[in-house]
Length: 152
Image 1 (cartoon, rainbow, N blue to C red):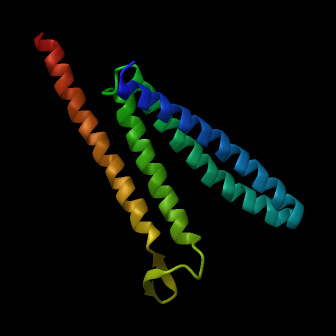
Image 2: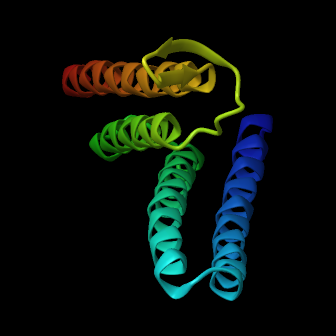
């Protein structure tokens, strides 16, 4: 087992653990919400949290599957291109949620008639764009790999 394979296996294990912890955290917060809030508020909060935590789980699942393709020595595939595009959609969605539901006391860098944006939104934008760039790089790499396979 070479060093890159052991790093990939470590990443896969970490992502699997993060998926389990995210699910358990969602369940715990939902139970606490139902015990402390009225039923209508608890259902609303749980639904919104389910969207956010579901997005996190989907993102972690796609990352884990990408790492698995690296372990299997087949990273340049159509599936990974779609996974990177899905990851970017998830990150942009989380950024939109961050804009809508950011704490009022968080530092803002833009405030226009009550509509403010905190600094973390730029992290979501950068990560979403980075994921789209990786999808395009993998698409180009798959094209080059396919051409090379045909010439051999």
